Length: 236
Image (cartoon, rainbow, N blue to C red):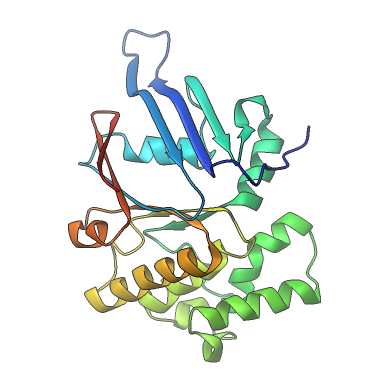
């Protein structure tokens, strides 16, 4: 089955999404309660809410890492409920980028090699175009002089910038950033946030930015609050 996207469609749509755990048991618990959400192309949206509110569950479903119990999830107009696991993996790898609180880089590999990993996973073998793309991204995040340095010899802020470059390797339509500045000092956090904003504005990449930092959330175009498994718009 094809996973081609529809350019005119919103980058993300959720319709009546529910998620329950331990289904069919006495401890069945519904965590998400009928969420509706639409994210247009070029959006830059903060997702906020207290711990245990359902943010992580929502992000896992948006990122196609988990399936909803019921409801529909569309990525660029593509109904993901129709896809098998292999097709979901392919769609996720090509159209969704991830930046987490912990960079998850391979420490012994260079910045360049880390950025090449998603492309290598998709194509199965390295080539010159892949290396050019990685070099361009490393330069774009301001680390051109460190491209050949092992990741474990970079600072925390530098490592997170490499993680952003890696997330952009496949030119995704949607970038999910889950507390990407949570482990950084204020200066490095601002630099990573500004980099995500730059990517959003220059590339048109839609960004969902999960954060507990109210100052960073206020700098986004739109804020969505998750409270007890329900979405509440706060602005934008």
